[in-house]
Length: 113
Length: 113
Image 1 (cartoon, each protein chain N blue to C red):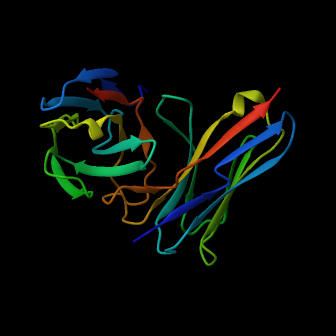
Image 2: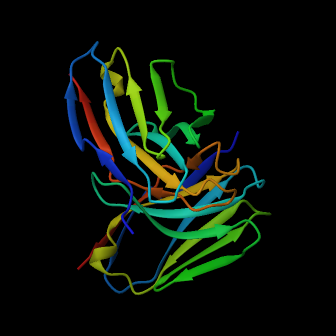
Image 3: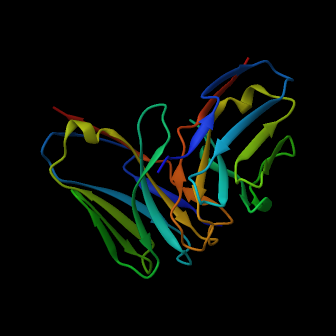
């Protein structure tokens, strides 16, 4: 069974631009969660989607948004990029049921210059 | 708000030693706890999942325990090998999956050949 895939793996953007990251979950999984990882803050929860609905959102500004498609693939968008948005963005896939295990993708390394 | 602390932040030991990594949390109302490893610049690999009703889980040389009453989990690694060198993260699910995982900052482990 294929694991979680994320594209692109690396991105370099300029301040003020916007970026879209993609995540394909494990086949059959209906939940996708997004996380930001930085050296200072560690791993922080951005939002979670289940069956195309956002169920919860972490403490991030509205510049961070996402969506999920009917095939469970998810995209995350960051508008008006800031230097502080430079991070490793990870997505996690699960069945979406309570107590289910989370499986992470390899991440997208975003650098904002 | 759930807070997760991992001690020590870094650990260096000779190959072959048995070692224990610690994770403490403030809110015992959890669904499950997961231990992950992360290699530099990579995504997270799930090592063990302990449900809230369980006390421990084992996989090969790894054993994880959970004591909700004291707010603690430990990851025991037997007969350490250089390939075990990585950052180990513990993460708690306090919201049934929809609220995302709450992560500790990790323990950076180096196994000296």
